[in-house]
Length: 151
Image (tube, rainbow, N blue to C red; front, side):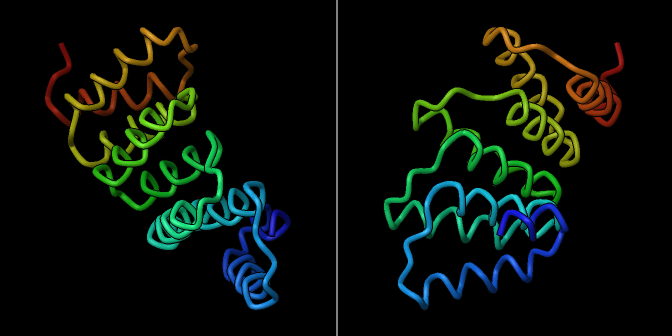
């Protein structure tokens, strides 16, 4: 499944995952993360959200990488509200928010024209002492531009 993710073959990853379920093999966190990441890399946010929800319901441990991938999938699918849901889930699960999670959530808000929410995330990131990068600043500049808040 991880190889399918790296090759942007989400359909193949999905088929392998389904085969695992039919074979009564229990997917672990790494397998779930690979499938969610595969869906994210192909902008299949609905499938990523479905896998995330189904695995959470089954009691599979969803970690920082699981949340990062789900937030990224929603960002690529222009689903800022869902991205923020996964971000909040990360916080509620007492997981350490990564720069990837912050950047993807900010980018999702930027794409959705929610510059104030992107700015709030930027402030949270500053308080968490994570390092900003070009993605962070790019998302913020673009969010402010779209919100006509360039000053």
